Amino acid sequence: MKFLLRILLPAVLLSAGSLAQAAATAAASAPPTAETRVFPTTPHARPDGRRWRLGYYDGGNYSEYPRTLRAVVDGLQKLGWLTLPPIPADLDSHQMWHFIATNAKSNTLQFVDDAWWQAGNFDAAQRPVMRAAIEQRIKDKHDIDLIIAMGTWAGQDMAALGAPVPTVVGSTSDPVGSGIIKSDQDSGMDNLFARVQPDRYQRQVQLFHQIVPFKTLGLVYEDSPEGRTYAAVSAVEQVAKEDHFKIVSCNAPATNIDAAQATLNAVDCYRRLSTQVDAMYVTAQRGLTPDAVTQVADILRQAQVPSFAMLGSDQVRAGLLMSLAQASYSYVGLFYAETIARIFNGAKPRQLSQIWVDPAKIAINLATARAIGFDPPVDILLAADEVYQ
Image (cartoon, rainbow, N blue to C red; front, side):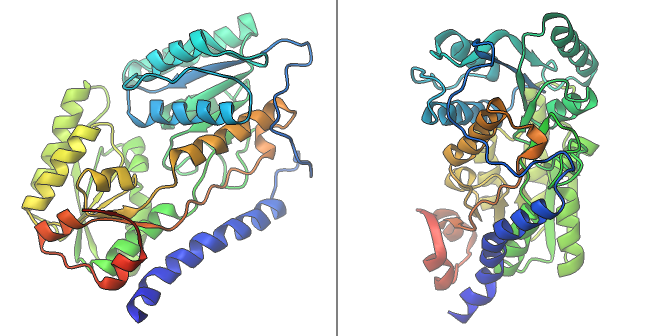
């Protein structure tokens, strides 16, 4: 039991204590425009009686975006803002937005069908075009009350525009490091909000290193500012310096190319690194589709390399060794939905707390553990919340 206490309590206490600490910090360093108020989440129409109108922007087709959008809409349904038939499976963000716009029933919300923008499919050349289109639409028609900006590119672009309407940024690894917001406590713009998870990736890598004391850690990412942000490279480098292990990286280009090539690049990198490292931190990357995760898990099992999934237990279920089990998307979606509801009830996005701390719960795949010859301590098994056989 001493092993369990030594390994797990630091992460658990940090996770449990961060919420209170973050709340105190946020109160102490709140932006000067913030008011001490509680904003309701109950459905409320515009002052002129019309429905609030939502738009959407993302950088390209990435599985996390429609999954997060689905969770946000589910959260808004729970709060009573709309009713919607079950959203079909396997829709991309454009198809999903059209389905919601066409089928949602609400006296307070309207998902504007043609207020959907995407920067090609992660085509950097399209970003200025999309920024101009969004800016022109807002200026000319005044028919968008809030934009859901999904992903780092979309968040950066809306921040570059000065967030001309309330903007809620979702599904981004590090909104501070990528320059979307000013800090964890202050977005820096009245109309801007982005969910932040302080020290999440440091905690993941620290826990992994304590359980599997590797000397070299593999890291696959696109070597660009955005790619390094998605992979939390600065967080991993911080832990590597503190815990004295070496990072071996592989550049897997993922933007300005088609999705199939991005996947080939990612899988090839994992294959190459599997013979060079003691362990692998599997990060967020456009090319790492759900099918590709299964491929990567097979590669790492054959090479007997322990792996840790940045994105949580779904990837452990697919064959990676372990992760900190991510809170259910329903909770994340409700967090975003409550944020949107409070904005429509009078809050400025900047006034709302951006801090989200997910629970420190371990997920482990025992079939993978057996395949790579890793015998997890009994204490780890007892502490695991999700065990896949």
